Length: 153
Length: 153
Image (spheres, rainbow over the protein chains, first blue to last red):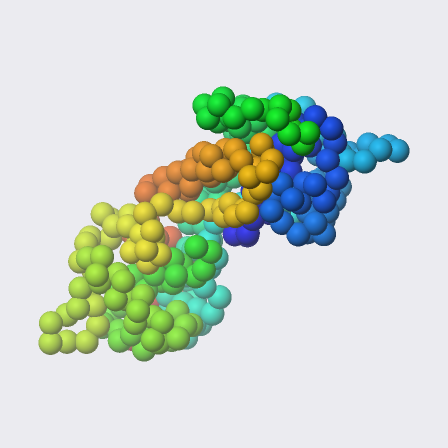
């Protein structure tokens, strides 16, 4: 699952959490730099996972979970639709005519499970609040004005 | 780098280490279930990294490093041509017109660096000898005959 859904979901959630006024999917798509319909589908995945909610009678979304309690593993699972990170792909056609080919699958699966678990654990240890803190630190460091745009204060 | 080079390289190295008589690239490609020219390139990458050596005046390869000292990180680096595992890809076009878009890159990079480091560490902790042990265990468990083929004893 080496696409940009996860990274875009983190971006989207920071917008939902930090924007001064709620942003439409089209505005969020502009900020993310992606296709609006793709971003709408991503937002739907996050909404269906209970991470964001629509604002009844109003545009935009709000977080359904405090940023400090929302782990990046939750975000990953909602955005990418799988429970654990899959880092590598196994080769699919080892030959049954060779003893190594017949027994390589469990070897590779055990090895990959360890790597996947390490990556998954790293996501579980971080929250959206950590990302927002990092963003604010970068804004401060560069002297950018956090309140300049209507989009995000 | 979510392709099957790494998993195929582990398979190839087990063949090099365990085969009763050295196997040609074509034989190894059959066992791996991949294109022979692709397997030859993979073998070249492993040879150039000093993991396997040609057998002077004879066909096939042999390990240039004891299996117990060859970490899977070494294998990954040689097979995939990068120093650390890259688990996720960042979205490429965040907008500079939005403060979140301007500052999301270091946030995502810091986050991804932690995940990459966790996955990389997991590979560093395993050796080819661990893989061979797992393979033998699976052979024993299933009652397969490890010496049946000429390919691997």
